[in-house]
Image (cartoon, helix red, strand yellow):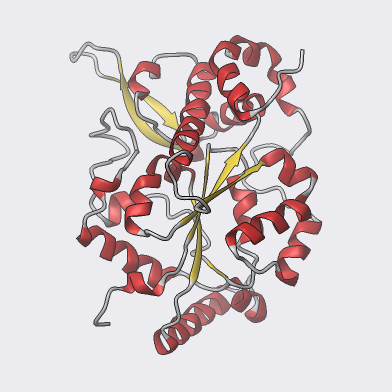
Amino acid sequence: MSRSRGKYFTRPIFIVGCPRSGTTLTYFLLASSPGAWSTFGEDQWIFERRLGLRINPTEDVDERGVSLDEYDATPERCEKIYDYFWKEVCNPGMFRLSGFQSGIARKVANRTSRYIRRVLRIPVRMIHKKPRNTLRISFLRAVFPDARFVFVFRDGRANVSSLMEGWKEKRFHTFQVPVGDDPRHKLLRQWAFELPPQWREWAERSLPEVCAFQWVAHNDFMLGIEKVLPKGTAVSVRYEDLVDNTTGELRRLCQCLDLSLGRALLKAAEALPAVASVSPPKKDKWRERTKEIESIRHIIQPMMDRLGYQWDE
């Protein structure tokens, strides 16, 4: 193609939030819209490995953690991002028609969607989800100036409890970070989920404290950038509201994002799946860790107040 593939994306939607906050559920539902195109995955290391950015999961982790800003969005990197997503995104409707469970059907649908896009050159509405992007909103806005964002918030007690549960699962371990100041005895700690800036101050703290730090940092990023984003660029949703009033919240989100509801999306809202769960979902499951949650109340209470969550005595 003679011109940038960036022109073939229109108002891409990025779902962001703290890990374990409900971003996967939000993505699963919104990606069911007939107008949505997706890669059907988080593309966990795309920016690092495919674009050659500085972040390595086992070395060269600096004070910025995994955050990126507009200065990281060089023209060359932007083109690589456009090229990657242009090749990978597909329309879920095609998968449903051809049989989503079949690997062969997925390949056929993928190739068909590429052919349609290549011939018609119609901009697609991409939806992408990755909690790491919470720390990269200014970077994504530089890459996709007309991007839209869905901010997912969750009660700090439940979110921290879920993070603690996830930290014990090896599949969520993403980094090995150094702890201690003695260069002769370099100790590494397995770090789960994302690595916000100032992580070094928390590397040697207890698990509840580290998870509280992660929750506060992600929400602080969203609240901070929400103040400077142009009106209509971002829409917020609470995990609790999405679970309790799924159809109503989806209607609101789709209206704000200019997405079609569609039969598939409404059907998905009827029976919410357990997505990315470590253990079976249960209301107020965090109360099983009441003592640990109470120990980090002083860390998460101010952010809970900012988000409008009440601490039940």
